[in-house]
Length: 136
Image (cartoon, rainbow, N blue to C red; front, top):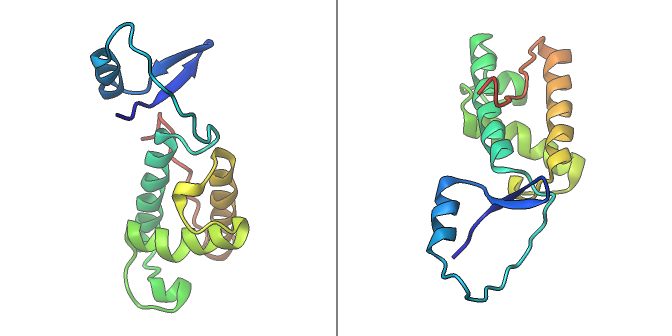
């Protein structure tokens, strides 16, 4: 069984209702082994924001009728998958030498975003703010 926790005020708190449900199923008095993995990896909220950003960039590029060919020489419209595979991941690999978005640490998401955002702004006048909890 896998349960995710967040640390708040020195306490480990189940990350979601599902994680809390799993925790409650565990027997009192039993001994459990906990393996802590890279605590600096992106959060679930950052993951949601990252994929929301892909959608927002795709919308902004399509609204300006900037096809993939205009940006990287292929005449197709943008979608979240093409933003991820044709913009985000190549920049991520160039800047961080990491192939998968699952490898990203919290600060690294900002580094890739800033690079893409600057390039889209300078070349095409497009600025897409990175999603926050307030913005969705």
